[in-house]
Amino acid sequence: MNLDHYTYRVTWSPEDGEHVGLCLEFPSLSWLADSPEKALAGIRQVVVLAVRDMLDNGEEAPQPMADREYSGKFQVRVPPAIHRTLVMKAAEEGVSLNRFVSAKLAV
Image 1: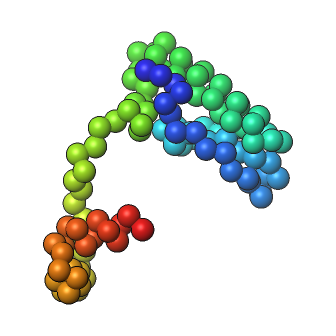
Image 2 (image 1 turned 60 degrees about the vertical axis):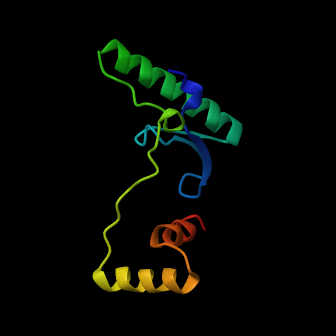
C-alpha cells in the first residue's frame, strides 16, 4: 500500500487560527500548523504512524480511495413525486433518466 495515495487536504481553521491537515481515509486524524506546508507534512506523518500501529496490531489499514475500483453504479431513493419530475425533465431534454441525473450530479 502506498501511503502517498491517501487523500490529503489542508484547510484553514478559524476556530484554531491555524491550518489543519486532514486525511479523508482517516477522518479522526488531523494536524494543526502555522503553515499549509507544515499541516500537510504533519498529517502525513500522523497517517504513517497510524498505519504502522494498525499493521503492528493485526488490523487492516483502509485502502486509499484513489486505489479503489468503482462500478459507476449507486442507488438513490427519492420520493415518487421527484422521480416523476425527473423522468419528465429527462423526456423534455430527449435523454434517458440516467443520463439526465448523471449530468445534474456532475455539476
